[in-house]
Image (tube, rainbow, N blue to C red; front, top):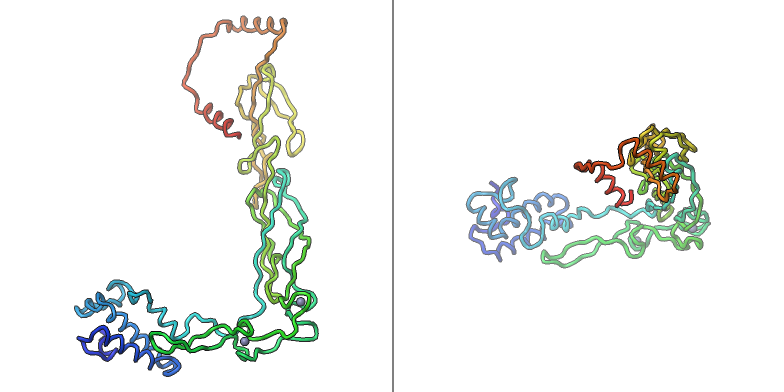
Length: 373
Ligand SMILES: [Zn+2]
Ligand SMILES: [Zn+2]
């Protein structure tokens, strides 16, 4: 087992104060500015030793022969005072700090526009022209942000590095920290004469027209991606993507459920009883619908393939026609007599009350009615 007391150079009965003091001294000696990269490995050992010995629980565990930093052993990492081993390590060796200057040209953001479509457009797909407002590359300076005829030059303060080093005091003593250069904003270059049209940004806002090919089967919430049609980035950087989000307008007649369409067709009682052929206006134009004699209320006639096209797939959903049978009202004398004759002929003048357990379909139809489907 690693001897943490030996690494810190303290006695086995050292007080917490002595341990802290020994650690600080070693941390200063092993700082990369002093010891170079050679100090890195030793500092890791020192930090681990301090992590164990500075924590009463871990130190006790270690004294009993268990290394709390070993995988699977101990009570987890951390200094117990809010500092992780990694934090301290990175403070010293600059892990995670960006190396070198930040490029001026960066990728732009994605943009989002909404597009309202009719059901027919969603069903068959369409081609639409859209006005979009996004940042585009500045044509005056070509995106580099410098007035034509001038150019960016190396920053005098950081000499192109984009960052400056500062010495800060901490409980570990003096620590070298790296911060972005304030003079150039971390770019390493400055633009002495910014382009007047974009104020040095390399991009300007502009309204333009883009053409969107909307495939069949899109629905509310579907997003169509137009690659590199979004915002041009700072410094004339590559454009993000443009997303077109579809919103489908409700149709007067047809209700969409997935790729199937539903509608209700009212037919007189006589037509339902005798059967008939009706013409129905669909998205595909007039279609004949064949009602069999004895069609019942709530019956569904399915017109295959007259629904919405499947998105990115062949085929279409169905059009479901829900039949509603209208019982005649306001009968004149002749009609009433005819119906009475019919009732007599069918032995239905005094129908037996026939109760039956409600078919589950009745409830689902009712529920659909109530929820407006
Ligand atoms: Zn410009
Ligand atoms: Zn600078």
